[in-house]
Amino acid sequence: MGLLEEQPRRLGGGQSRCPYCGLPQDRVATLEQDWVLLEPDMNPLAHTVPAEHRWIELSDGRVTVYGVCPPDQFQRCRIEHRLACPAQPLPDLWPWLTSLRGENARQVERRDDPEPPPPPEEWPDAG
Image (cartoon, rainbow, N blue to C red; front, side, top):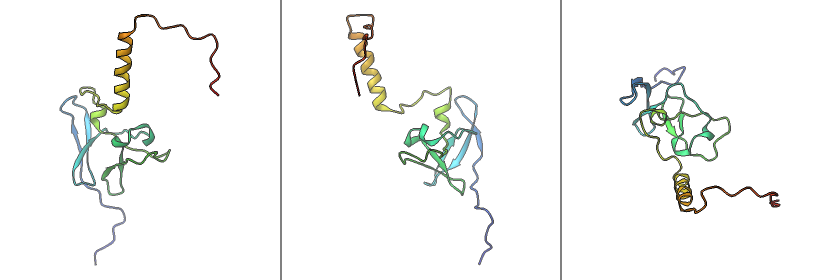
């Protein structure tokens, strides 16, 4: 029998420089035996990050996408460097919102009246 380790063994990762912006990025192993490049020293609250972009650190140093909705309000996560990279375009995080913004932009272009209507003097009862 082998000796029991005091702490879980960590998989080697390291840091590399982003080829686009030159800033450091953490190379971290995933549960799927792959690697992901994460933003160093960035641990936002998980509920502020779209589900498919939340990387949760496991006890052995690997990470996995955490798609539970809604996550625990105190859960922290990591994000990919490409989301924070100033030299790469931001991906479409909410396709429905991008579509809505595009439709709203087309509605503005179609309007005959270039100025928005004044707000109503009294707001209707919405309660």
